[in-house]
Image (cartoon, rainbow over all chains, first blue to last red; front, side, top):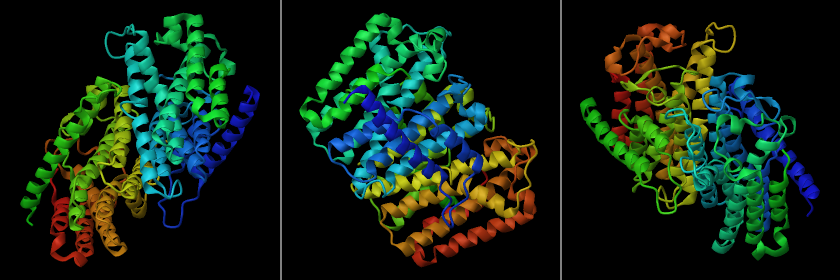
Length: 309
Length: 309
């Protein structure tokens, strides 16, 4: 599959995700159900709808398809990952955190609403993710639902995404004497794996859970996801260092200005590009056992390495 | 069971909850596990340990016991409810929300650490709650684990706790012209049921899920929990209106100062006391089918109505 074909596929997935999330966040309350506070719902819609590449749900769907998982489960699992991703962006953008005004070319949630609403919208989106996964509509087998919850909760928590964001703030010198920490390459890689990689790895793992993949297949998918997760962050650092704000859809050059530890800072642009190529090769190697059935995942790996926004 | 006996029971439960949470939040990383950011973990410990009546886990344990559920499941479910409760307090205390400096007689998390750390500690505690519930150590049957997750996620989200906090901010006039809304008694009751009651109802429901209670028994437990949840909030409003800050462990008189809609404001102190008695009677009535086996839950209802802090 050529990159252009994958981009078309991704656009199709994004449309499905957008429509399903919109339904989920727009459902009228069922009879007897407690009314939903409208301002909060509007902020959740602002956060979760209207943009995003939806790469994580595309990974979940592609892995589920690889293992012949059918039904709504993979889409719903993908929605849950997107809810966690969206909540993390809302909270990361807050004035107390990264203080960003712009996200995907639109005002961030706390700019469009207010800080309190943004905090609560993020909180509600995280809760919604686990609501979606544990709902019987996601899978008939409760053990599968519980496994999905566990995979996502681990990826989102102290040892994953939230922990990585904490390390990132610490690396910027937010908690000590105000000077950025001089992280080693290994430390930056670990931070990025937690902050960004863990959720991409969970997206893939959830596809394998839904497909009831065996241990060897899960290990192969996990190695693939770890490699594209790392590649995604290197590509992000390169886009921040080199990209234009209009194309990327958010402010660029912020990493260097904030003293953020990035692999571009440690390895230089050429070194980071070489790392990106190596990670992409690792991802493709991990898929060898699946032969042609994994072409969609191969295309995703190439897309991650070459994306322009 | 006399109130003093129940307080002794509650203190014993609180000790077990404290010890179990401390273990959970203090475990050394397993081999190969990603390192935990220490500052974040310290903030989570500050939020979750060192106080709290632990009424919610006590309810989960008492309901589970009523239905002869054995093992670690009820304690772990109770820990999960406490994690959600603790996260909500951390976020509610933030400057962008209620801006509180004191909680249980100690500095709030953002005062002891900083706003960013408090946001992330709350986020991580919410994730941890679902991690705990979906872990096979909570129950051997995955369907039970998934049901626990669903009960807690629904109670914590848009139609429950977070939605209720949003309505509370709106009622204070935070989003319109700055004037408090004049809520009706029904609206205040609905707001309080979402903000406070939903989590207490979930605590009880999770005990019934673990005990595989039948529909009639679940309905009885649900009616009981709804009544004590409402009673808990009326008692809270009375304590705020009449209590002394030192005994209550947080600032009192804040509701009136903030223009908060409370049942004391609408019904007066005597009217609120009468409501509290009626709700307690409802709770006790709901337990009639269980006879003497529900004495612990009866004592919990009386404790809620008579607590002094």
